[in-house]
Amino acid sequence: MAHTKVQELLRHEEVPFKSIWHPIAYSAQKTAAFAHVSGNEFAKPVMVRVDGKLCMVVVPGAAQVDLDLLREATGAHDVRLANESEFKNLFPDCEVGAMPPFGHLYGLQTFVAERLSHDEIIAFNAGSHNELIEMTFRDYSRLEHPRIIRVARGSA
Image (cartoon, rainbow, N blue to C red):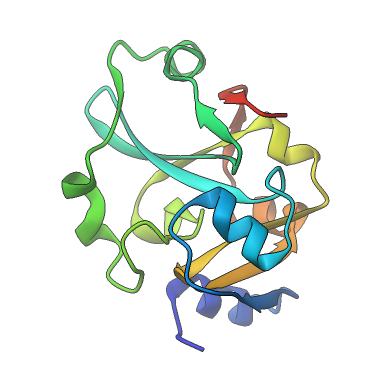
């Protein structure tokens, strides 16, 4: 198992988690299916710019970020999806697109879709396209301190 910042954090804080290995997948839906995890419990990080500042928004795997809701929740004027070139170097311990939903480990503010806060268990990429981490949302929230907002649209 590779040692990413999130795995080091979980071990240091003695947080119980489970690693789930699966065939390589590059989409949230396929990853969840390969790992036999509900798409609604899959925590998918999406990189955005909020008034020029790079931030992470975490939504259920089957959902999308609603930029209007994000703008409303943050009071920002300019909200847009970030281009891969704007963030790919921020996660040196992760494969591009497989970063975990722990923005604070990379100097980013993290917003989480309110829907995910109702899940007892969440799963997310562990820094690669073939490993997930599964843990309680309560432990995730305690470690990350995300701002929980209504920001997701799409499948419930």
